[in-house]
Amino acid sequence: MSTNIQYMRRCFALARQALPWCRPNPAVGCVLVQDGTVVGEGHTQVAGKEHAEIMALNAAGASARGATAYVSLEPCAHHGRTGPCAEALVKAGVARVVCALGDPNPLVNGKGFAMLRAAGIAVDTPLLAEEAEAINPGFNKRMRSGLPYVRMKLAMSLDGRTAMASGESKWITGEEARADVQLLRARSCAILTGGGTVAKDDPQLNVRLPGYEHFQPLRVVADSIMRMPPASKLLTMPGKLLVAVAKNNPAKAAAMKAAAANHCEFELLTCAGSDGRVDLRALMQYLATEKQCNDVLVETGGMLAGAVMRAGLVDEVIVYVAPKLLGMEAQALLQLPGIRTLAEGIALEFLDVAMVGKDCRMRLRVLPAHSLPA
Image 1 (cartoon, rainbow, N blue to C red):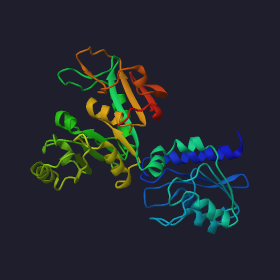
Image 2: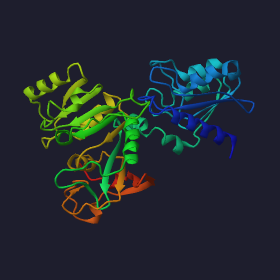
Image 3: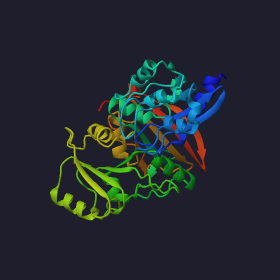
């Protein structure tokens, strides 16, 4: 393994330490090397604090002059809540920058490399770009398409059922799988569920992992006909709640707002599609552009799950399979009407399969070319 690859993989390991603390910024790692010795390391801090390059430069001090900087993403070149990292590298006297990937953010997108080269700094890029892409799929997609990276979490029995005919669904999977879902929530900027699910199950959709309590995602309810009761737990929990409706009911909206007062930051969004339901694509665009959501986790019932999938909005599916058989009268995993032939089916590919406790977790990528039309 070349030293360039070795140091870049160290950057990737550092970048992963920034998740989920750095959102909505990308997770970035930086390693400064002087004469074969690491003199500084860093990763993205909480939004508004130091970026990876600044943290590494602070650690290196005067040893940064003449050093090689390895960075997992192009150094920024614009003034945001912090100054440009490319400018800081120039001022520190770094001689060379090895970068895995260009930054898709239009405010950067080559400008960081240009600033470095204009100062006489050698820039080598890309390096292990595919591995770098995998660290920030949500940020990269949001910058390139104006949409978040959407993961759909599903839990089912071995015969593809999610709940008994009576509605009983707790708990299909075991404790370990439920803890794994908590980590998924912590790494998400938003969690999407449906008004019907809220009315039936009254979920909390919060992160209960020790150490992650301060990184609660935005909770989003797609509630076309405003079925969500004003007494729902979501309205009385601290944090941020967005309820998207197809048509506003002023009386119901007032009751929800009153219930949320002094509890959570409540927002009602009207975004109707041509079918009289919430326009899911418009909702995702709103989450990406207005709420800076990189990653959205879908945790909902079969109807909304099927609608999000059918709209072609899902990038990844995470399925927890319990070693149970619930029978044909139990509720199906997804409602996907309109599929009549194998060729019309949604194609996916396996990313990994692992045991989580007594349950099996499967991660799959949705193949865009085979997504059903909206």
